[in-house]
Image (cartoon, rainbow over all chains, first blue to last red):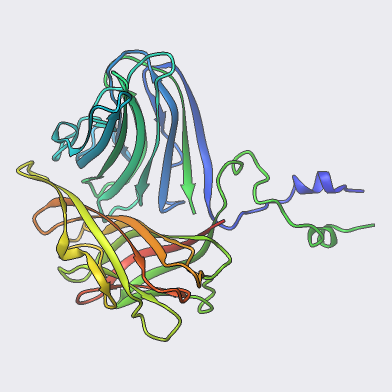
Length: 195
Length: 205
């Protein structure tokens, strides 16, 4: 006779919506972290989270880019904006600003998720999320928005807000993360589909 | 012997039973509305399977590729128990902007998009373009709408391309300034219709 224990794992229980984990990658001295499957028309929104991302090199930025379906290379056209607040641990320097050094205007470079550099001290890292809307659309541009907190080298907290769009009507089906220089020493990256 | 169907209804399924769902968070899809030349989209408790009461403390609305039929704006209205969407709101708004030709950027408070004790529409954007590839995407959080003690906070972000081919990312936050329960939300436009797009409503436990 089937027991409760055996039955519960044979029952496709849905939690009625919510985020569904599609992929998870743990970086380990990784040059890149790529999500090359699972981004399609199944979901209207995809959510990337990155946790305790630690760079191999000091003073570098975590970046991302997309690749359109059927194309090669992470080099889609991006228009973006970035602002952030920061405060040093000595409580002597704080500010809020838009930093044009971190934005793109129809650029095809990897998009920075911060304007300042992430520290690579043993306990230094960044964590946050990036939402991508309707990437499978072949009609509209694809908006993205995200927020992260980062340990800036020189002992600052940075509250980074990044937003923009892939200015293409081609579907985006791949996303890649990498550091502006050096490897991603450690960190967990997850891709969710949002029902 | 107990059958599958009998057993299935004798326990409350856990919200997450697979590794793919563990840690996913208790975010429950309540309603999906697809616009089709719609003058507005409403979510009213008790109507069309919408739950917007004390079931959840937080509600989240996702705006996905809302394409407008005119060069106009998107706006928000609330309902505080009556039949009219006339709930009083006070909110602020700031926006980051960046033109595609890199000629300008902006990071400013938009006082023309804020409201102080307004019962009418609260704009979620300025006038934008109805270019074929342009559409709004973003989100709106509403906190504790069923409270009859406190005001009801909300905040969100919405992205769109302006008529000047610039990214406009609006960040808005405020509150419905009444102690009656908030039981409805309406998204509407200045003129014309929401030609296409999707709004999803979630409850967050």
